[in-house]
View 1 (tube, rainbow, N blue to C red):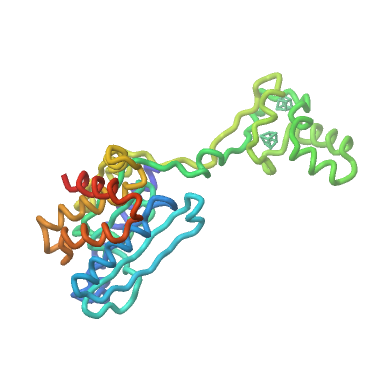
View 2: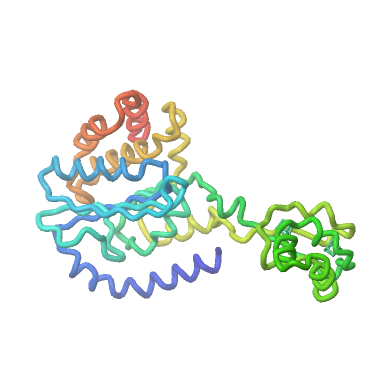
Length: 295
Ligand code: SF4
Ligand code: SF4
């Protein structure tokens, strides 16, 4: 991840030279807010509040959502653009005025939207995706393997592929003879074979890794006005970790009150639309979350 972060920093430094090119297409009065996170974190609700707040301030608003397996913890991002005459719903690269990232790896994923003037708020609490926790594959240490074939017999994947060819015994024998152990290619990472190996030659390795927190901090603190903080901790204090999005709106409201040139949305407007937009049963916790974010 370190290499990829360094590469990103280099790329973005070069691209900054072209920043004026994007600003030309951005429209001078158009303001851009990007919100990203993972499914279930309330990215859409935060975007709804910001869009409504911009409408309440008298602007025309356009939004665009991108999400994959959002209900299963996949990436979600929403572009909110507002102004007098917004030409397109999608934010051009390096043109976000404000970027709210509810999850650190999702911040990295959308790094190309920020520039040196972007206000970036990142929730530092990671959400490790299932691809990292369950994405594993067997690795055979060929120096330790004695070719006993125990692993082949315990592995249902190897059994299936051999049995389906109507000659399990023959294929088992040839698998042992040719490669002496299970096939790593077909492995689903179930781990069943691990105990069958008498020489400890089998190991489950992760296919994916999660970016290091320090690398994420370095990437953003080098390149923009960034605040990286565990906003989820504040949401827990307010009574519900799911209010992390609202805590971050509170923080944004506080910054906008002190720096109205960043976005022409008043903190009180954001507070008011937030109260209208959250589910009634969670209103009290969300008001507390918004105020904790502002504090
Ligand atoms: S981890 Fe599971 S699927 Fe992979 S080789 Fe072992 S038994 Fe087969
Ligand atoms: S059980 Fe271990 S020693 Fe035996 S074939 Fe598999 S990897 Fe090799």
